[in-house]
Length: 168
Image 1 (cartoon, rainbow, N blue to C red):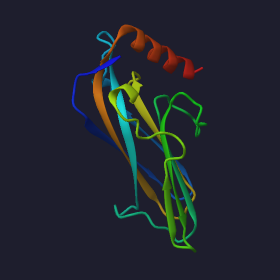
Image 2 (cartoon, rainbow, N blue to C red):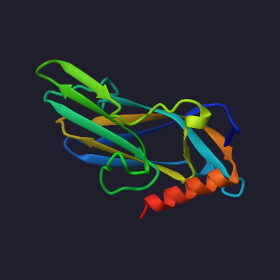
Image 3 (tube, rainbow, N blue to C red):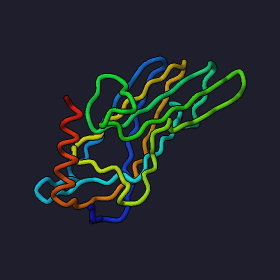
Image 4 (cartoon, helix red, strand yellow):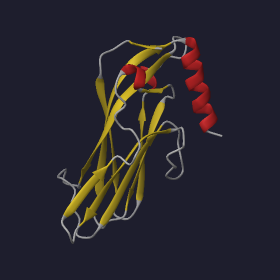
């Protein structure tokens, strides 16, 4: 069982991707963690904001698919939804001809809810991957609502083992 040490706060990280490419970023959360005291980060929700290079809402002249993933392990490519390192994912689909935009959180929960339902992280870095198929550069910003928590020994050990096992 986790016990909150702080109120909710927001961390942000942005990744800029040139048209038709992939980009990565990372957020060092090591200063929020302490192995000796079983301190981790409880992620309550992650929201994604898509903007163009002028920090305005993203638009494109052609149909576009944008995808983002946040994980607690460094992955060389996009991962499947059953990968235990995956924390959140989302996409933005732009259908220029029809004038439609749709933003989806896939089927993956990006809003975890209460402290007991939060995604606990004990690794010291969060990794971001953004893929863009369009013709315009895009900035994807992740807004991560979280709390610093103290975990009991069994929970901390289980999360640490799960995180390590995902790397194999």
